[in-house]
Amino acid sequence: MKNLIGRWEAFLRLGRLTRASDLFKARTVYVTAIGFCLVQMANFVQMYFAYGGWILDHTLLLVAVGVFMATAISLRVQANFDFVSVLWGSIILLGIGGTSIPSNVGINSALLPVLVAGTVLIALLGSVRSLLIYCASAGLLIVCLHMNASNADITLLSDPAYVALRNSQRTMQAFIAIVLAGLVLGLLASSLERLFRSLEQSLTDARAAEAAKTQFLADMSHELRTPLNGVLGMNQLMLRTDLDDTQKNYAQIVEDCGRGMITVIDDILDLSRLEADKVSLTPTAFNPAKMLDSIIALHQANASAKDVELYLQVEPGLPDFFMGDHGRLRQIMGNLISNAVKFTDEGYVAMSMRAQDMQDGRWWLNFFVEDSGVGITPDRQASIFKRFEQAQDGQKNIVRGSGLGLAICRELTELFGGEISVTSEPGKGSRFCVAIPLSAVVLDEPKPAAAQQPSLATSNSAAQPVKMVG
Image (cartoon, rainbow, N blue to C red):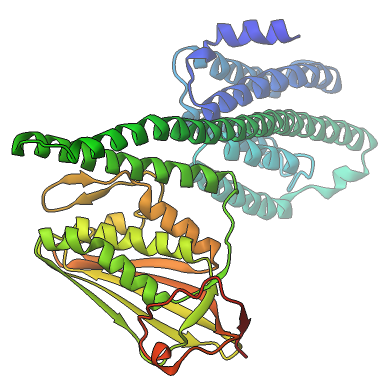
């Protein structure tokens, strides 16, 4: 059977159809045409004996069968499914109207399922416009049949021969509708089952490929770090030797490039860990104001080299210490301030922290990084936090960055249970906001008052015992 179907599809040249939807429609056409022809041949014989010879209906039946088969064979030349749906819909409507209206039989209930079968065919083969036209035409035909029912000769219902003939015709028409609808819907169900199996297999393959890619990235990142650290170590030793200005400049370029590669490798490692769900938060007590101050100090040299001013503002009156993963939060804010300095050629970069008390010992900490840099175009703001979406200088059309930093920031922020957002205008800078919920804590052993006043504390209390506020 499969060989026979394969030969038929080869004869129709269905292999040239590249879209799965077109292939399904083509199969629907020839399955319906073959089923229609087989059933109508049985109907042809039944009508011949019922009417005692050849009548006009036999001629119309042969024309319909010929049109259906010609339509299926026409797929060899052109697969115009809208034309097929309109043609078949017209044949169905004309056939029902032609057998019901002239004879004043009214609404023939046996023919109504054929209208439904036609609706199924048009919906699968044609466009929405074709379906609407067919439904409107079918509705108009039903109205005509209803009006025609007033002229029906009901005295014929008392004639046993007429009733027997009518019943046999209704039986055959209902059988035709069932066969056509069953063939089409059976093909649909079979195609959907194959589609779902293919999707499930593709999903399994994609997950396996994703896992392999993640492991590969992790392995390669580790392998790259080892020789790169050796290069940087030897380069630092060379920088301590007596070098002339040109040699020192070359060595410093090697140092800067190596540090940049280390940053990219770290991002790839973080990405692979996040994909493998191997990143977890380790809460400790820390001072967020001091953390922000240290981040500002770390990037001060780069900002000063570009004549960019760095600012830090912390809302007064906030608790000094919070419980959270200090290292991961520092990574988020470090990436944001690094990007801000990178994309700001003049002006300022400002970091600020505000908080909102949730009255249960927890606070919503809002961290802002604002700059006067190149900004981000509106079409890129929606995708800037996706993986491998590289930031682009809209004014100079220069791509900067690896496209991993902001994606890692987003995933780490979500790991905290928070959210990250951006507002920006090209040429006028950007403003990133990180909002995360953290619990305030106090130390078991109170510190001297002098150490409690400034928000930028000089001591590190991460290793001291803590208890929750409230």
